[in-house]
Image 1 (spheres, one colour):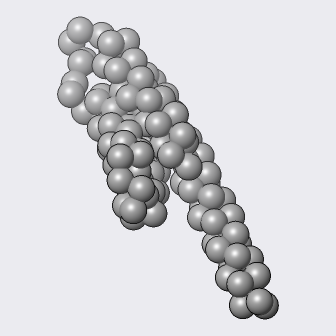
Image 2 (spheres, rainbow, N blue to C red):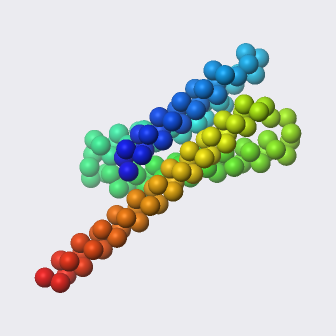
Image 3 (cartoon, one colour):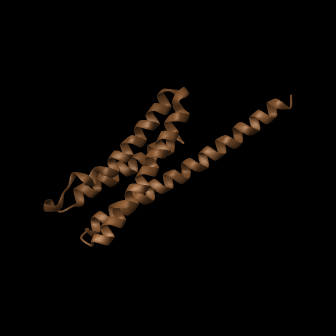
Length: 130
């Protein structure tokens, strides 16, 4: 799970940097770095998990919430952009990339949490039988 936090975090950081650097000079905005902020938070959660094993579960749950914020933010931005009609195609593309990456990360988190729960229950049932 920590590896996923680093992977998706770096991809989101690159998404934000690409969105800013590919924008026209007159349309550059710091809001292009929103995916980078989401990605940086995922990386920080991953670093906390590596540095403090006792905090791993909490840090990974926080990272799942950060991923969910990324999904909801992308959906909100897409809805606003599509209803107002004035969004750039680059901005929409970067928002879609952020939403897809964040959604994939949240799905990976849910799968990991479910697998950890199954493993914990199996370990507990094995110790109960003894």
